[in-house]
Structures are given as structure tokens and as C-alpha cells.
Image (cartoon, rainbow, N blue to C red):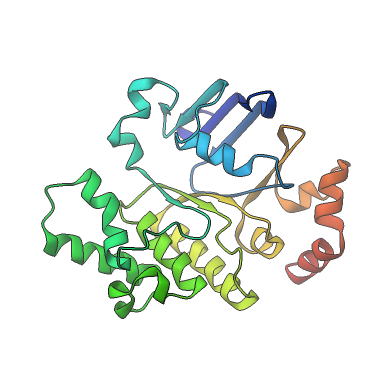
Length: 258
């Protein structure tokens, strides 16, 4: 598959913290326009992988290309033109507690477009807030006034502020009840289809994997041990994959979407 068909290309990646090696010879390609789910046991480095891709974690070795740019090149890593082409929803929303929802959404806009006047900033923020499924009156609320689900949507609105091509979601449905999680899944798929996004989605939620992910990548043994559609992964003999997808919860999720 050529570079222009892959939005993300990770090759021979190594991440280590002192003597603790998290990733070794990790390889991953993310195709343009897909929702890729990333799963793995606790401590396998799912968030570390995401942070490496977006430039918040400097790998020990390897190559990372995002949107046809070498992200480990010093000039590229600090290039705003590359960084503004993706949006990130961190775990829990990671909202600034002293800013309103609208002000949170405006943070990346102020960084990348300091010449925008307040009226335009307010207009863009309201558009993204509504796009994320929040009511208009959420714009003036502070994070402490929001429910868990609303915080996730506010974080999503901020991730969409720059009209990104690529969206990173780190455990977006964690802590949500089943109804709220299903609605967030539906919103993710709707946005992906409407806006033409590529989505890199870290999750433990089996329902999310079945409902909206085009492919799933599994991290174990410090690398990507398998990637493909769920029905393909179900054929794997690897013990973690078998236990995860064929255990009681995995069987229930598979039956629900079969």
C-alpha cells in the first residue's frame, strides 16, 4: 500500500522508559478514511503509541509518518501546518477547568490563528459545540458543570476545532453508561462519514469495536501482533486475542452485532 493510501505509517518503533521497554519493532499502517480500533491489555502502551504518533512522546527508535510527513524530523515535529491537520480527544476530555466550553474549543484556534477576531472565534466554537451533539447553552458552562458524557463531547468539539483530517480518540466511551456510549459511537461514525475523517480510536469497549471500527489492531508482546476485521481476529490462536474476543463479554458483543 502506497504512502498516499495510508494516513499513518509506523515502522520499527521502539519506546522505552529507562530499562522498561514498552514497544519493540512495532509496525502499523492506518488507512485513509477508516476507523481503526486499537486494543491491548493494561500496560501495553496504547496511549504511548498515540502520544508517539502526535509528537508528545519521543520514541527511542523507528519511523513515524503522518499525512505523508516524517514526524520524527525536528522541523516537521514543530511544524504547525502538520499539527493543525489532526485533532485529539484525550481520556476524560482533558478540558481546562477555568475556561468555559466555548473557550476550551477556541484554545487551538487562538494558537494557530491568532489573527481571528472574537466574533469569528465564537462562531466557530458554537458550530463545533453543536456538531458534537451538545446544546447551545453548554458553550458558557464550565467543565465542573458538565456530566461525564458532556465533557467527552466538549473535548470532541475542541478536537474538531481545526477541521482536522485525522482524529485521535483515547478511550472516548470509558465511564459512560451503555446508552451514552452507544450514542457517542454513533456520533463518531456519523462524523467520520460526514467529514471524511480517519479515526485512530483506543478503546476497551467491545461494543464500540463491533459497532463502528473497520479494523482492529491488537498490541501485545510489545508490538502489533494482529490487525484486521474482528471476524479475522477471531481466527487467531494468540491467547490474549482468544480470551479477549472469545470470552463471555466478547461472545455477547459478537452475538449482538452478528
